[in-house]
Length: 433
Image (cartoon, rainbow, N blue to C red; front, side, top):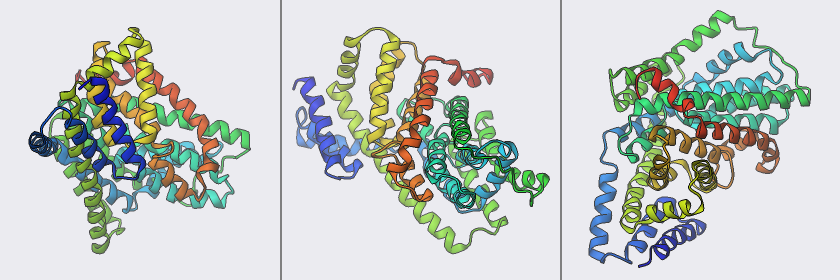
């Protein structure tokens, strides 16, 4: 069958199923089977599909995903967020709109600990929103700052997004990816802080300072155990003491011990955390399994090569190609969550990026940065919905306040795309690339 027709069948069937409300993993499997029927027999389709779905999750590295999810859920319920908020106030307490600034800095810290943008938006927003309400902050302003900055947790390690990308991209070093995410993640957070500062000045929101009832020494002392998790896990992975999977296991144990010490978790609560983590992990691993089947169908049908040829027919200028890739990925991020986007579109766009001299490390950071922006935009925008719920505002109210954040983050994305040193600088200094 003509490659163009095959490509149309795959994406049209996939899009129609999503529009009908079919779960994304089921949509991936059905669209893959329908497309494969044009070139393979039914016996071949069933055998190969099951084989690829099984092999897609038969990876030791992927064990880190459910473990990091569990660690994030324990932290989200373990009293860690409030301590990080107080710690953040030490640095931003004198800035206009300091509560929103603390929210952003807290999201950077909590996201780095939990590796989850949704967990960061929920934990930080839950801590700060009531205080912001007491001080008569505009709810839309507060929610926008929380929503825009929460996805920094997808870039600042440890994060399961890089682990999934490593698996799809052919075993790219996870420790190198982790180090590559630091500067872009920090840039993303700083960009949000600038926007929040300008908004606060414009709206006349004064600095209220930190909570004086808690001493500086106690604030730092309370935050140190949580911040040590980053040093232990990332330090251990980068130094080669343990793998990412083993580091995820250590993170679970550390967070559990910390929560017990803080007396913020009981046996019943822990059982609920385990159940929720198992549900989330099952969804993500099934997505990975289903996407492995789709990746095979696309490769067998020649779809990545066809898309590559289509892009190259537009231009052979690498700057134009990179901008086109970003536009496509941004649009995809508005309709698709991060894990399936990584799984489906890495095999398509990574070879194109590499042909123009972009490394697999830099491409991974660029891809996940795009998905961070997708997290805060409708219609998927998981962080958008969580942030609006926590802040008790509608999407219509918060969207105008999000636009300046989105524009600044687009600039940051272009910097990450066209300045390799932002992604590769830290790994190079550490001798990882």
